[in-house]
Amino acid sequence: MSPSPIATPDTYQQALMGYHELLGMHVVEWQQDRAVVELTIEPKHLNRSGNVHGGVLASMLDSALSLAGLHCDVPGNIRRGMTLSLTTTFVGPARQGVLRATGTLRGGGQKTYMSSGEIVDEKGNLVAMGEGSFRRRSGSESSEGFPQSSPGEPAE
Image (cartoon, rainbow, N blue to C red; front, top):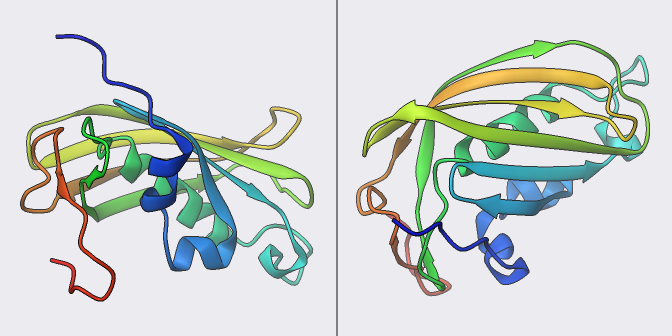
């Protein structure tokens, strides 16, 4: 089987929407079995101690780990999934700069899959790590995915 094409910035836009845009996350790499999400730390991401809030870190891990199993081979098509479980371990504080979450597919089948990953800061310091189980929604089992819904059309 030939390697899957690496997603283009156009396909990155359909990967993260809504809540992710609110946080300011961006997909910077997305290919079969791997996804990388970045976030530039802003004051809105900090807790009362001045560190990035654990909820922001968990959201980054959730996104990167989930996307690692949802890459789509067909331009214009998408794959959807949902988180079944997510375990996070917070290793060190982050206060400024850019955070990078990398998710890697570790195993699973057509419907359920497992991923693991980590978040590092600009200097490469480990900030958090996690692992999760995810379920591909109906129609998303194949790497070919399905056509994205039109705006205003209800999602599955």
